[in-house]
Length: 194
Picture 1 (cartoon, one colour):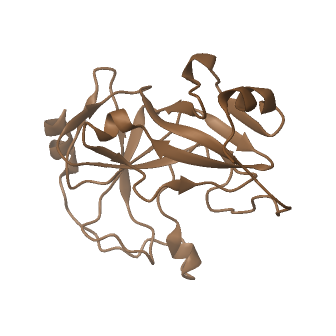
Picture 2 (cartoon, rainbow, N blue to C red; picture 1 turned 90 degrees about the horizontal axis):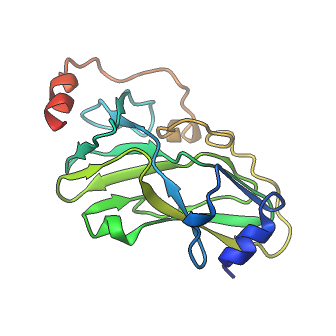
Picture 3 (cartoon, rainbow, N blue to C red; picture 1 turned 180 degrees about the vertical axis):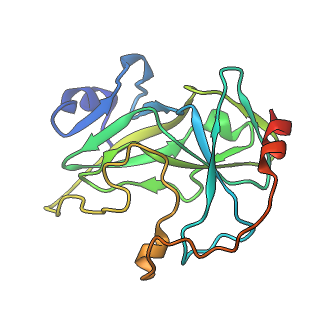
C-alpha cells in the first residue's frame, strides 16, 4: 500500500521526515526531491567492482550543465529523508525521461529506517542540460507489514554526500586504491561540455 500525500503529511515527524520540506512539491502519492549542485564522475576507463574507483567532483553552475551520453553521473538529493515503519522508494520523473535523462535505471527501493540523502545514478540518451535545485525525482512510501530490524547498512546509511559504489566491501576488499594510474585530461573534456 502506497501512502497518499495526506498520509505523508500526517506521518511527517513520526514515521518519516523530509528536510527541507515544501508542501508545493507534494503529488497525489509522492513528493518531488531536488538535485544538489554537485555531481561525481568516475575517472576510470574500466570500473572495478572489487576496488574503489577514482572520481572527480563537478559543480553544476546556476546556468546549467550539459550531460553527455556514455558517461555515468552520480548526484544526490538536496533533501535528507528519514523513515521508520515505512519503506521509501525513489522514482524518476517522467518529464526528465522524456528528455532522455535516465535516473536510477534499476529503481531505488530504500530500507525501512534509512536516514540520509539519496545518491542518484544518471545517464542520458542524448545531450541534456540540467540545473541545480531542479526537481529530479519523486519519493513514495510503502506500508511495511510485520516487524523488521532497523536499517543497519553502514555503507550508505546516514549519508550526507554523493556515494560512489562501495560494492568492493561486500566482495571482501578494503578501501585501498588498486586501480592503475592513468593520465587523462578530464578538465578539458568537462570544460568543453559547459
